[in-house]
Image (tube, rainbow, N blue to C red; front, top):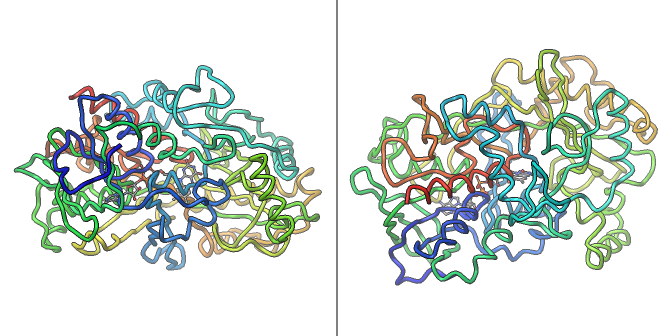
Length: 537
Ligand SMILES: Cc1cc2nc3c(=O)[nH]c(=O)nc-3n(C[C@H](O)[C@H](O)[C@H](O)COP(=O)(O)OP(=O)(O)OC[C@H]3O[C@@H](n4cnc5c(N)ncnc54)[C@H](O)[C@@H]3O)c2cc1C
């Protein structure tokens, strides 16, 4: 891998963004020695140890050295609160700072994409890409690959609270599920994580590191793409800022945007691709009038039921004690096991809460510690959390330019709970979390419900709790949606409509949010996107 020098000006492909999709692209394209590839990343190298230690996700979430640290505009249906939106700004992108939970989604999600006019994107057609990306520690089977770069592993141990959560959920009729990414997603069980022997398997460690020796791959870190350069309607390169200088690189073949669900639409708009009338307000000359850019924003909103434990067995108890923290540190350093190897979810469940749901409509993330907000200090009491999110919200938001300056953050309107029905699903999910907590054996370990608190019982009180406390679970997608309609930004081969030589390949192309965490799908999009690019070469 070469480092970007002032001399290097022309490449076959330029990839913008070294995140979950961009690292895959850089690896797969540069595997063919005939092509030269430039990978531009606004963030720096992934040297912070907290990126690699799984629990470090709680540290990097607010660390502006590796995180864009966005926030939404005041959300009208969340009491006007601005919601903090972390996004990775470092090699590996959000895949270097995420919660490591490995979930692909439901078969029907991808079949839905295909049915909306996107041939090639059904579940059966994407499964080979999920398998190709995966190094499944349990070994291969019909659903899992074991030769891919990204490691997927089981937790090193099963905490008694997780065991009790699973047992109580089963008592309420939820089927056990040893593999949420196998035959079916529904049920309760343990998450698998993107870890390799107790360390994060990030897009950068999985896909970039193995490509280190390739001389046809050039990496520019701390290089912020400012706009795509066009000759007429053909993308011919990228203007970027690095080392305090504005520079240009040319792409002989294609420019590939992998900046993620916030930055890819922003960069398109800065480049003149978007709603022409709106762009004119910022003095940006239109290249293609595509009103869908930045629209169709979807995200998972989480409500968190926090429970006080009867005994000091939670990770709050571990990390609030210097001695036990030291022990946990030693356990990780010597054995790569213990509390430092967990992250945003240990046990989980995919359940149907609405009577008419034909497939799971809610996901549980069960964790053996508690905070007011992810990444904030742990509660001083022995606490643990059952977080719930609606899997397929109907609400839609948008990303807009706030300024023509590439360094200023765009405006994020998530519009959570703006569609009728979304609040109801979340309310019923909170009720179910409560029912599980009140069912033995979990009930035997619960001292009391900390939040929403037993007093919040009727619909109004639960709605107020949700509106006052719900937060993102960090899965924004959909802002450069793939499809055929008026609002589609890319076609089924991820080519930006109305121009040539330009694709978007990242989570922003999902027409609808997958029913689960989004990293695995972003990596699979990178894998399929690389194939599409190479097939066209
Ligand atoms: C805190 C957090 C927790 C999460 N937890 C989970 C989880 O447990 N499981 C899961 O599956 N998913 C999780 N996710 C979501 C998942 O990580 C993302 O959906 C996925 O990484 C998105 O991939 P992407 O390639 O679209 O974007 P990203 O991975 O965000 O990559 C975009 C990259 O482009 C760079 N970039 C942007 N603009 C420019 C520019 N103008 N010039 C140069 N570079 C640029 C960025 O710095 C970044 O590196 C989480 C995300 C966050 C933030």
